[in-house]
Image 1 (cartoon, one colour):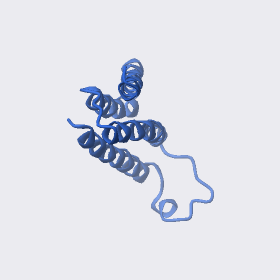
Image 2: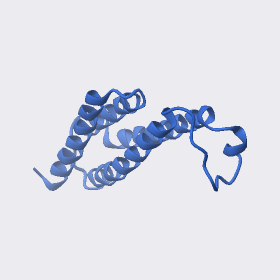
Image 3: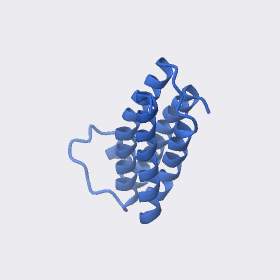
Length: 127
């Protein structure tokens, strides 16, 4: 995929994380709470909502760095090869691994995505 296509896919993946969290929230909280101002949150039912929230937060943290690097690659007309695509794949794999608490593979997926960011930075720097 091109860097631009990867950026578009990364935004689509942001929406997937958001919708996953929203879907889980519907099962974790009462409708009254979800339509309230949420001043005092009750304890959620089950663990999935917390995992979806943390996975989304982790994605946002990584997405910002990816977007900056990817845009910089686009603007400078540099290429990072398959690396942006590998980042997308690692992040797609990460979400269900986090939601279903697959601990070691989740860490591998996260590590691969961070390595991809480092490689993208290296490509931007001309290494």
